[in-house]
Structure formats: structure tokens, C-alpha cells
Length: 167
Image (cartoon, rainbow, N blue to C red; front, side, top):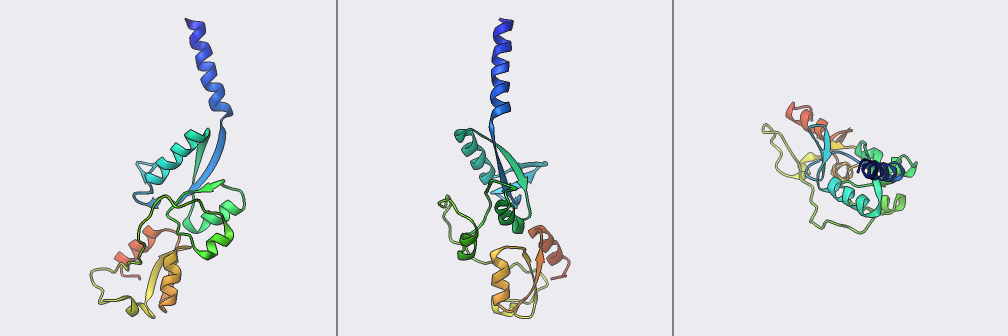
């Protein structure tokens, strides 16, 4: 019986040691799709990619990267794939290949303001300081409205400055 257990354990170890690795980039700041919970990466996209990896025979190695760094990391081979809340744009399609969409929902720009703000519509953003996450669609949105764009590596950084009346 001991020999059988040793063979089983050896077989499991050999499979896990030689499993192909797939390095996947994400930006763990987009609840409920990808985020950190108690220091562990979780969310819909994370679970989906883990399942895809399992079905395809890959061990998923996660890389939490700033949103604006995801496409450059893919282009330079630092990661093999991206799974994140990233909209397909013409510019992004020129840089990388996208999978077929797996979520369909209407995307709108919402402008968050603090409770002391007098802003009532997006047109009032002209010449105002607007915080956006680097590389996001909101960066282009705010620029087209004539806002002074303040880019952040993290969406949470923008929220903190909004709460502190810095943007």
C-alpha cells in the first residue's frame, strides 16, 4: 500500500512540475471582476481564467499590473494573456488581439463627484481637474470634454484625492 501511495504522489508531483505555465496579467482593482481579498486575487475574471487554464492544462501564474501597463507587458512578452475590464477600441485592436467578448453590457461614463461639488453635468468638467486611471477610456473622455486630466496609476488613488478635494 505504501508503494502505491508513493507512486500516486510521484505521479501528481510530476504532472504539476511539468505543467505548462500561462502568465496572465490583470489589474486587481475592478470589483467584482478582479480584486484582492485578504491578499488573495479573486473575482469573476480570475475564476474564469483559472477554469480555462485547468481545462487547457495550464497552470495560471498571475501578474497584478497597473492598467496602463497591461498591453505593453503583453507586447514585450512579460505576460502571455490579459484578463481585465478592458474595452476593445480601434487603437487597442491595432496593438493586440482580443478574444470574443464574454460579457455584454452597456458601458457608460459616470462622473463621480464629492458631496461638496456643484457640478451637474459632464459639460461642466471643462477646465476642471479630473482624475482618471492611466490608460482608461475615461482619460480620453475627460480630455475631449476639455478637462485638465490628472492621471493615476490606481483608480483608488483618484477616489482618495476626490474625497480630499484635490480633484
